[in-house]
Length: 152
Picture 1: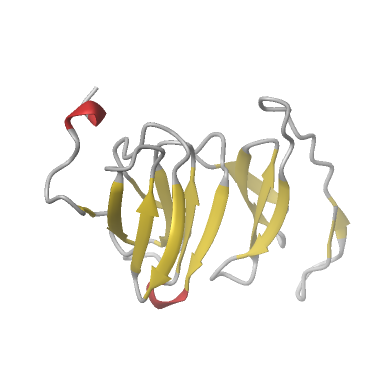
Picture 2: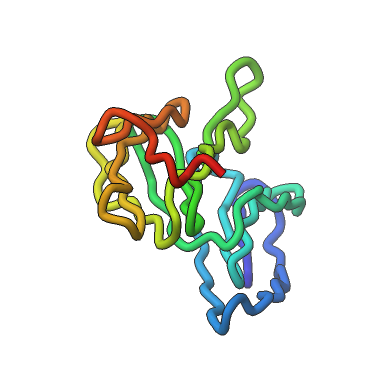
């Protein structure tokens, strides 16, 4: 993949995607920080600083969905059972992983809609319906309480 940053020399990154369960999803997305891109390859997600050519793997695997939440200045990554929020850290403004939910789904977690800073989400079980605040990762369950089967 070729990166062409505004304030630095173009460069080529070789990204080797690890195969996860027969799927090798690949995506490159911008972030709220113009010098940082998100790369998803083989289920792993990375923040890539396109100016200084550094990268950091995010704590989400396999990354199955990436959703932009403009009102929160965030990107949210879904794995089969958790969500991870990426935004600028308070204090220094560095783009980083700022929150991770507890296990919120048995499997097949999907963000189905974004409304303002809220994410409407569903898991594989019909009672796994909830909203997440993309500013802090707090979860509000549709039934009022976290389903007991997710406690382990």
